[in-house]
Image 1 (cartoon, rainbow, N blue to C red):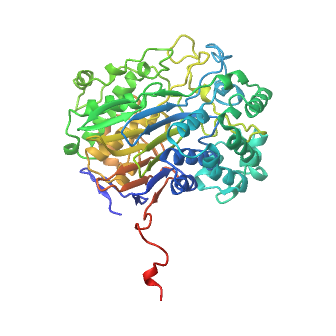
Image 2: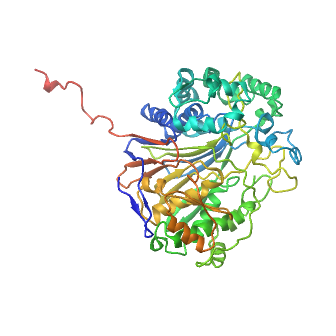
Image 3: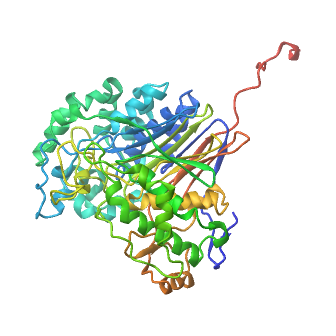
Length: 553
């Protein structure tokens, strides 16, 4: 595959290959999950059926990233072009109090049973099936159930994640048994089976999300958490809800960019930054040049300076969405940009607490539905405990709240956590152009922002756009991936940026591009185990029979 050469001499060559097909496309961060989604499309399901099947499969094969005891966002588009966001973000338990972690060991807020928020993933997945699917929860859970019961081969990526947090996993008997067999971290290729999770999936297939949110499964989880010092109650699980929200929308270079609203910061700030850079000829600046990277870094600093007022649960705090994505506001902020030097934008108030350990699924079917979904249990392996009766790994979403009372992100009973998730769908003249998203915590919307520019300003192929080197900053060091060379980093440093080489910025992007001839192209990047899976070929030509009468001798 050919490489991409920037004016400054940067060269990158995509490491993976795209997939193409007209019958449907599934792109996830694990091949087994992509296969699970593709099976649903092959069996007559919709993109939403496939997305939920993939997410359930990911809860087995990417247990460090996602699960039924987590939260997330589903951005869904219908064949008619309508969009909605199903908000399954977690919220603080009713027993939570603003001062509960103030002045205490930060680990109490991020590890163990007291770090667990009320999950809503299952509620969103079930609602999505009811609104946009053809298959039952039992149907779409079948691949995940098989993976949990029979086991799967651990990828090097999973093994590395286990090794990274092995000390924490060793403190919980269930996690140690599953991921530290024989006392040593899981090795690539070792089989991982979770019989308790398989039984939970059977229960969910029979009873639906009500099994967790008001049923015996939920009671079992609450009991297991209580034994470990948790504060979640069965009333919390019964009261949990999925919220349907209207997305935020804006135009960039004549393309409509549609993303999630608050409590996500993703859609708002991607649009804010795109409107900020729209006053510059990005294509003429060139990809990877010091001038273009300086502009991106300043746009990110500007967005993070505003993020504190735009990232909140709208039920608890008014969010000035219209103002933040307005073009006159972008023009006013653009006037402060100095092309010759980095500047100090007003500091953001949101602490750098959001976890980068999430997963993403992008799916499209032949009828025109699109499901662009980002879900997580927050940190790597969530609360880093296993609920032994259910086989579930709970989230540690309490870590995202501000432990100091009286602030926008302070803890409050029933308050939804905020997120940088940015599942985007792009349309040109009403027709789908692309859908993309990725994991990566605070680095998510910076990455989708750059991917949009890669596609629309630099004219990259989809594979190039998702794999291109990224940078990130929120006002401190400018993190730069290895694709940017020493000369480029030195040029940015001369402009006043504190550059920091890092192995990668955010996680594996999963994207689909829609071509005018009806073909879909799927791409995943090197930052995760991402794999696109396409339905190519198709049904037999009308009128074809196995043995036409005229052919018989």
